[in-house]
Image (cartoon, rainbow, N blue to C red; front, side, top):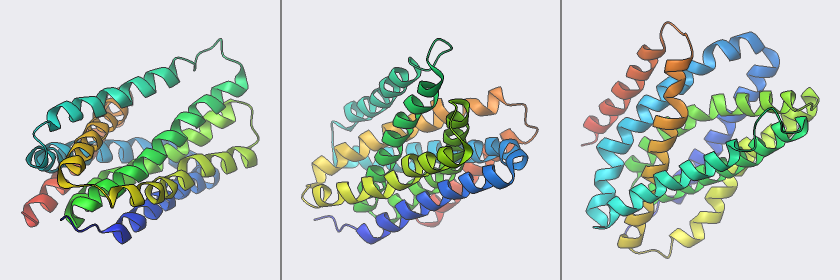
Length: 242
């Protein structure tokens, strides 16, 4: 019987919502600083997420379910298809309002799934949940900024853009955790291992496909250092608790 640590999952989800809100606050009050440093947060988060996924979460999932590789691939492909579907509608021929609203819906779904991931990983152990939280919470900061900027581009006023970004990118994360907790409480080790593998696939996608390319596209002098910092911090935590 796996002892769930739902209190930590709830705390992590609210922490993520707080970091997203901080990103929204920064972009409103310190727009230049927010744009200049969002890339570093993304790079650090990418390094941490990939390290945590490959060195801790994936091996843990494999030990719980022998079909975990299948679920790992399914998780990655599912997030890939969701994001492809979303971005297919974000183009120059799309009406201006849709340019903001369509990504908003995708980010809202993504943030809710983040909350589900918190519930799953903390159900395995506090360490597993904490390691997943390390990278995921940091990527919430630029996510809030991106959501706000897209809404402004879609023609929304700064006030309305901030409110919609807060609802979609911040509040949906605790909502996802609260929705997932009652279901996870009833799961056995094999099913939980499958869900953990799906979550790992999602984390790998977020890190490798969504965040890491920023280090290549953005000309920031210390982006590689930020990525390496995420890797080293994650390794340090894993070795400390090994």
